[in-house]
Length: 134
Image (tube, rainbow, N blue to C red; front, side, top):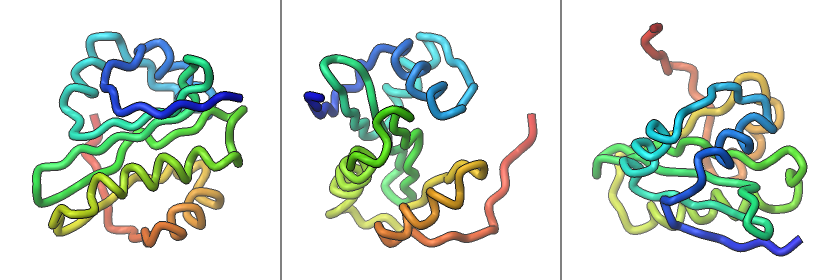
């Protein structure tokens, strides 16, 4: 395993879909949609193993609020410190900014693992979130 890190937003969209599918996230997005998502992200961090995308996370923020999205590690690469690398780099991006809140979503199907993981980075669970149904 030879890991490299990148903050380049030009990630191959097929690799993002493959990475997400590896953990059961089944929303497939087109090249155009991923390009728009990545372009509008304030920060994108990815981890590759010899060119294969094995982990990523991204930030969307407006100067006041900050949200971490798409924090994911390929199922074959989990428990090897990659998630910690991703979180540390996302948090480093926020270090000197004065956000009133920094939030993230945790997959409800994997909360037993994710909540203790995110707690290590001082995130806490709150149950007041809602979203608009489509």
